[in-house]
Length: 137
Image 1: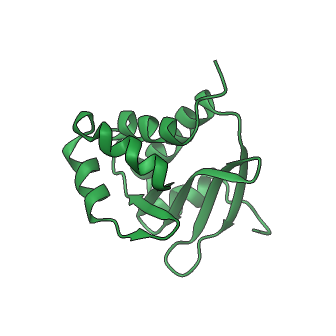
Image 2 (image 1 turned 90 degrees about the vertical axis):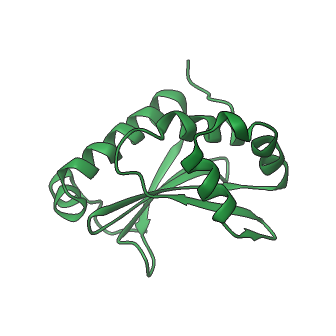
């Protein structure tokens, strides 16, 4: 756990104003559709911060922040991968490419996106729906 949650100023200094806006828009989009517990953490070796959306012990997705970069990670298990693969043609080329290039582990595909704008957000929301139906109207 983090001792101090980064404020808007610290996040802007870390990722830059345009990416902080992307981060906020993505958080707002997820918050609109999902009522989740949100947990801040250190980002490990590769990232400065981790911001995890969880409910009932299950992670929906995780956002990451480091210098001049934000990340959006979603882990698809076996059944979830089948759902994606059945519908893959309806996702954008970039999402399909990142999915294909992501290594599959015994517990699923840990798919990391590094959005620079909001262009992939519709696909992100569809990926989240595979994991869990939105629980907010």
